Structures are given as C-alpha cells and as structure tokens.
Image (cartoon, rainbow, N blue to C red; front, side, top):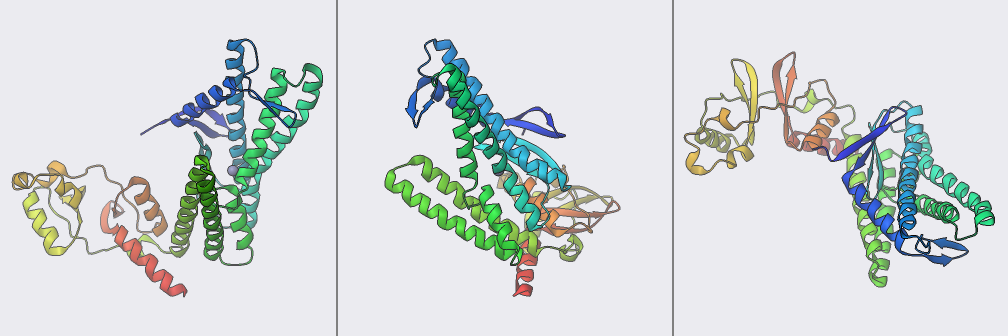
Length: 370
Ligand SMILES: [Zn+2]
C-alpha cells in the first residue's frame, strides 16, 4: 500500500509526504491564522493581521516552512549517515515529524553519537538564525509585521523541536545519544537496555505529570516514548543475539512438502498429525506455493473435502538463501508479516525457516551469553 507521495530527491534520497502530514499542515495553518498572542516580546500567530486572506496565506506559508525545517532536521541525520556509507532509503514526513528510513546502522558508538546529534544541531542552528534575523526584521517593520512573526515563530518552534528531540528517551535522538554514550563503556545490548530503562522512567514521569495536569498531549507523548523504548530494546537484543548466525544453521532441512492436488480435508489431518502449521507445495520438483493453517481456516469446514490446496495456497513466494543472515530472515518476516520462509539454493528447496526457529535460536544464544 502506498500512502505517501514522493516530492523529489535531495542527496539522492527520496523525500516523501505521508497523507497524515496534510492533516497537520491544515491544523497548523488553522491555528496560526486564528490566534495572536504576545509573550516575551514575540507575537505568536497571524490572527492580528487585518486582511483575512493574508492571514491564511501567511499561516499556510509558515506551516510549509516549519515542516521544511523538520525535513532539514532529518537530512541532518541522513547527511552524517551518508558520509559514513550508510544508505538511506527515504525520508517520510508524518504528522508527528519526519522519519528517515535507513539500512541497519553499524554499531559504532562514535558514529551514532554524531548521527543522533546532527538532527537537533540543524534545528538549533535554524532556530538561532531565524531568531537572530527577527531582530532586524522587527526594527524595520515592527514586532507585528508578518516577516517578524514568521521569523520569530520559526525560531521558537525550531528550538522546541531541538529540545524535544534531545529528550533522553527512544525513539527520540536523545535516547540514541544516551545509548551511544553508554555503548562506549559497555556492551551494546546492555547500553540499549540502560538507555531504554531511563526512557521508560522518563515516560512514566511524563505520564504522571500529564495525568495530574490533565494534559492530553503529554499523555500521548509519554505513551509514544514508552512504546519506543520497549521496541528499541527488543529489536536490538534480537539483532545482536542473532549476529553471525546463518539461515542454514537454524532452518529445518527435513522439509515435508505436499502436492497441489491434496484436498484441504487431507491437509487438516496432516497438520494435526505432524503438528506443523504450514507446508511448501511442490509440483514436479518445483516450489509452486505455500499453504498455512490460516489459509485452511479461511475455508469453511463443509467445503474442505472438495477444495484442493492449489485453489487457495499463496502463490506469491518470498524466499531466502541458506547463506543469508538469520536476522535478515527475521526482518523479512516482520516486514512481510509472514511466519515462515522457504529456503532456496540454486532453485532447489533445501529447507524452511520459521518464526519458531528464530525464537529458539534467540533463546539459545541468550543462554550462551550468560
Ligand atoms: Zn532527529
């Protein structure tokens, strides 16, 4: 499903807009067009501008500029990654900000430190520069001039963006900085665990504060931070413990395949007898599909005796080679939301690797470490 629109490329990286992003552009524009408030010598919002149409145009322009700054923040991270030879697939702007999707980052704390720092640094520089320029703009056109409001509001928002991202919690940049800093003095998994724990404590405090002040936004952010911390912790542990393990080492090579002519009634009995949840389907020595318990359950009991496997098996086959990393298999299954992958070598089916195989491998590796 493609729910994002490609805007263009910068440094060879496609910049995309997710549809939820249009929603936030509307919200920001609406907000800035309908209020005007002075605080600390800065006027926020274009609500005091007399002409209604101009109010909306300035607000829309502001919203677009603000999210250009979010994109620049992500490009800051991407630039350092790019310089270190990491390829970046894309940058997508969602309603809560930008996300740069890149291939797995090699575990080099020094590089991660630089990379995590680059985004907030970009936001900080833009923030200070626009705030600085707001001075002459105010001297020239007054504190209420559109240019002054534009510059000073962008300045403040960029400083907030920097501060928010420096929160010491995953998935914020601050969490990554913290982990990289810990990783210079302890193993990576432990460093991630410690950074994630700090993030969770932080999220809990934020949640309590949100509860007492009835601040809905704070509750939302706290939840976001808590989930982010837990996921980072899990993902790191898995990829580290599977390091150096190949698909060949964990796959089941005794593959029982079935013929496309088998009926679903027969398949059900086979699954029940062998306690397998999925089988590759072979026809004349060639893999033609894969069938799982879920596929079987989609067909009503009464029709199973007349339905053949090739009428409902999945024909779109995702596979993996025996010499690929086990963590690649894990990633593939997660991305595709499937539970097993046929292992193919020189066009021949040599095994099958399932989620259960991966879980077992992870558990055994954890044993080995302790
Ligand atoms: Zn960032």
